[in-house]
Image 1: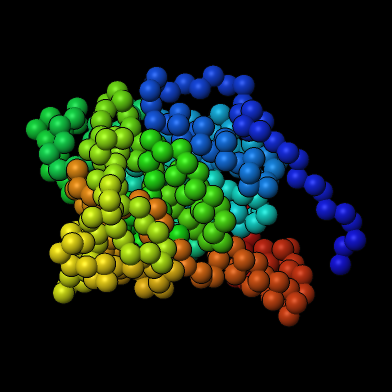
Image 2: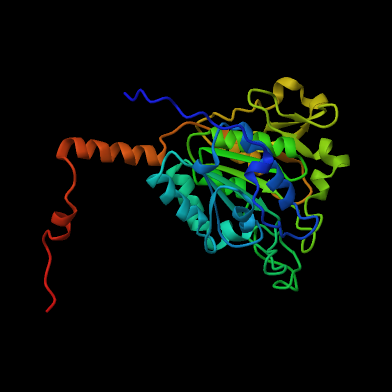
Length: 343
């Protein structure tokens, strides 16, 4: 056992986590508030910049690593959920944050995303969902609603959109949450929970693109409607919402989540939220409540369960193999049968 003293974590502020790069998003973009929330939160996590990395793909959100005074990588389209597990396996002590938009991580990156979640690699994935392709100037995305008129769908989209929370739950993600860019306190709470979770954590962030999809979430996130439209999930509590908690969520006879009036059914009929339920079925039902635009929408932690973490499991396998067979011999492996010479 080492007797060397532990190195103290230096006290930092938001300024220490920000680079000297000019932040170049469109004025009014929701990405600014997400960036600020992250930079304000990180000093409280007890982590260092040297052991923190941000990895992104392509898109407006993917500029994030430029503005973080940490290690970072601006990778290629959709590949951040593939690159980040490799880093985590090689350097498990590093905090890995994955940044991407709905177009980046749910289109070309969709396959990488679901397998990172399935494998339960200990990475923190922040998925900015503005329901549009912003960087390429306003084409419809995998989360755009049916009928969305854009440059690439002039007669309206006929594609059924992905629900990112449903996708993550279907991929057996061990931590799934949702927040929005109009509430810094809630964003930071969800990001902290994701960081504390030992396994793959996905946080969907409703984010406004004020140039190509302005007001996409106005019907649920504007201050004058939030109390009526946002359903704040609290573990162990009956799911209620509305200014006076007059509405709630219950399961119907088919196991589907439905909106009810508390006065009609009583508090005892309401669904008690259990984020630690090992079966994701109820969490999935909650994710379908807002499977449309302008409907009451759950935010908060949908699921937070413990299951084996991928990097730890593979490291344990390697240690076991080395203990049983001794150190590997790369030269012997490369020259083992069958081999042949090319003359």
